[in-house]
Every structure is written in C-alpha cells, then in structure tokens.
Amino acid sequence: MYVVGKKDDLSIVEVSGTYSGGNPPDSIILANVVARYGGTTDDYDVYGFSDTSGDASRVMAGDEFTLVWTGTYPTNTITGLDFSVEDNKLWLHVTTDITQFIADGSDKCDVTFEMWTADNLGVDTSFNGTYLIPLGNPVRVGYASVTFVDGVSTTKSIRTTEWGTWLFPGVRTRLNGWKIHNNIEVLALIDL
Image 1 (cartoon, one colour):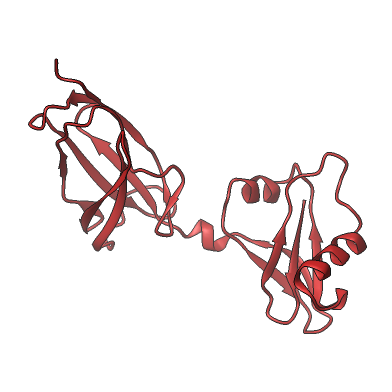
Image 2 (cartoon, rainbow, N blue to C red; image 1 turned 90 degrees about the vertical axis):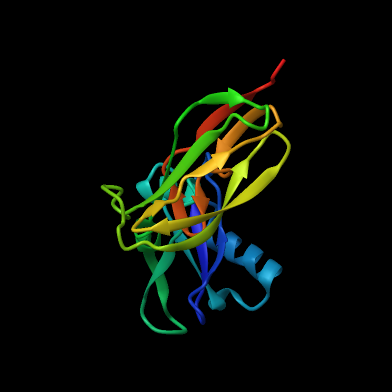
C-alpha cells in the first residue's frame, strides 16, 4: 500500500489499495500522480507500507489519518501516518427497549443514544448539544433531532405504519466525526 502527499501543503493526494505483488516503483506512482494532478515528481512524496501492517488495516477500515513529514519544503519526506484524529473521536452507542414492534402507528420502540469517550470506557459527561442522527427505515433514511445532555440523549419513541427492518443509527461506521459503536436492527411487524 502507499500514500502520496503533496510537499508544499502537506496534503494527502492519493491513497492506494492493497497490491498482491507489492507496490509499484515510486517512479511509476509519481508519474501517474503528475499525469492526474499536474506539477512535477518533485512536488510529491510516496510513503509505502506493508499491506499486512497495522497502518494498512486502519487505512482500509476507513480510519482518518494525517501524514507525518520530516524536513522542510521542498525536500520534505513522509515518514509515517498519524491516526490521532481517529483515536480521539467519540463513540456513539445506541440502545432500544425492544427488538420488534407492531407497525400499526401506535406501538412503539424507544431509542436512546449515548456519547462515550474516545477510549470507549464510559459516557462523556461533557458532551451536550442537538444533532441530526439518521434512522434507517424500510423505505428510506430519515433523521431524528437528538438532544444530548451530559452525554445521554433524550429517548426517542418511534411509531410507524412502515413494516420491515429499522436501523439505529442509519449508518454503519462513522457519523458527524464520531465512530459508531453499535447498530441495532428493530423489526416493525405488519399488523394483520
């Protein structure tokens, strides 16, 4: 795997996938980058790392990172990846009171969200505010306005006549700069 960075603004230009035969030579990578983004090969640097490394696992999982640079422009080089941005993201936890309910418009499912600390060891009692959180329903993704006080949301009661599987929250891995700890599927049953 490799990452290409731009030397003048230290930005990430390109992130590769894994290669079964190892990375192509840096000269080929840089020639392709120049063809796509312009400039010269001296404007960019390539940082290669093993497809089986911890860095590769995190990059492939979608973890956010920045580049670690050594030296000053124009001779600076990438020496590593820094995942501290990802490591400091809070965790969104979700709980429901039931796993199925009748989709008759009156039966309900209560959903509560909690914001946990970056180390995922407990509720972040300093977290407050109102946020839109997607809720996946059988027809589309809707949004709930959720207010957190001391890291815990007010309970949202979901009533519906749409039968099928609901997903809380309606995304699987990341939302609003948070990591998703768990998703809960709740089945809204047809009322016959």
